[in-house]
Length: 498
Image (cartoon, rainbow, N blue to C red; front, side, top):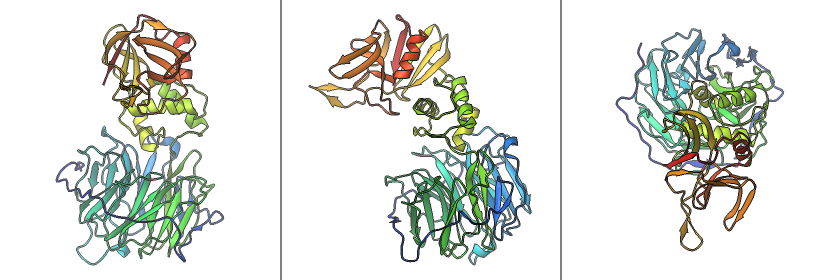
């Protein structure tokens, strides 16, 4: 069956007031389970309570990481989905199709299937067993179930991170990283966090059995309730070994379970912890999703974790080598430090991703199929300063050699009527100082001047946004590399544009 996408768009994206509570209500105490049963399974899928382990692919055999799962209505099967849209079906789950052979604009980040019978209200019967896949841009692919709409042709402020089906199976919600909610079919829009600053990004959502409410959960365990969804407690303020990455609600709608990246589970309301995946996940993975069994148990599915500042190991080394192979300058040491953060900033900027220095499973999939940045210049050695994307491109005869993260003028007034703007146009590097230049506006480390007092120079602060008085910043380590390898000799043309 061909995937259906991008038609009959119906989005309710207004903002409503959430039930926003970060303190536990009386009796709303989380129940963690560090010593609970480890569950059955192979570490890629773990089954607890009434849920049975029915199979899982070997992590090392996957072309793309697993990012989600959905149970069949009977609870006797489940589907797993990878970030390329590849589907793995077990038990009575029927393969209905996948996007594994398609070239996606954005990776798949989650999936949903019509709810088990216990959670369905009276009304029209649910569609036949099938599933929806959702991509980071909000594109929806329907297999064996109706297509109700998507945001795939919209420009979203933040990527979609998950979806939840309406209890009838005749609609679904999607949630973005900033807490924005998009409703389709018979799923009502009941509010969002899209206009509210969050301490941590939203990572998952779950719906109430009535279809008149839903919860959003953030990476720090903060919980946001809308409609008839009751706030029953949160993990905000608790000391978690790993961020929360998934959630599911109980059949009654009077409880929910949060799952952290290390497999720890926390139960609220009438939810019961049937076991924890702590210490039982496949090496190098973290929880990517949780799915409820009709009998009260649940499954955890693990995929490759997000990589961020502080991570260490072979996964980081592979990341560094891949970025370096694409021309993003950095080091290869297996340690995700500040220089690797700069590499990731540059990659995210070049590919239109959120500039947060963190690569999740979906973004790692983008990295795997990424190609070198294409410069505007076509001949000779050329430096380009792309002010829109905030990157520096060094190219030779139209082929990118290096890409650096940069920070240019922030556009704010300073001094006596001056404005922090990096001048645009075609210039030439004509003067340089092999040392520290102290000016009235600050320190310029080993500056290379291209027009007047404007220079490309090293700085201890190179954020992922415009922050300078007009100069073009790179890290001190990057400017040392540029000098040591004569990457930008005097006389090199530079093109500054936005």
